[in-house]
Length: 108
Image (cartoon, rainbow, N blue to C red; front, side, top):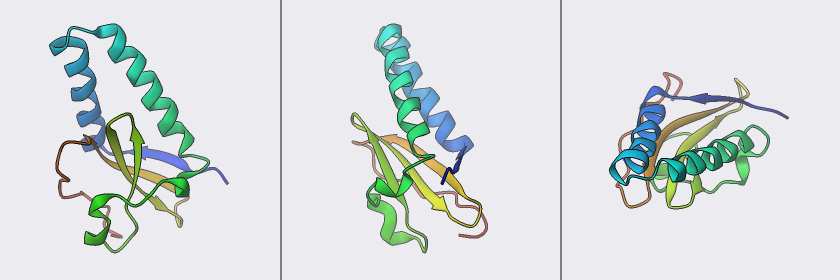
């Protein structure tokens, strides 16, 4: 089964800020480009095998299972929406950052 991949605005903006940090603040645009390619490839893999990822630290706070995809030291937080056949990427953060409240769709 193939799932649609839906990335929230919050996750996209956090990812964009992280890549910008690497490229500009760390003065390493080539590393930023390489890391982003790796992260996007990993994200695309969720379309086929999203259930392989473990529950995220914030999983206990929500009704539906919240999972995490780890890319180096960064986490993509997502849930699998079986009804819509979609993987909803809810957040992105560096592993050293604390979880934030997730903005879930109205179905929970």
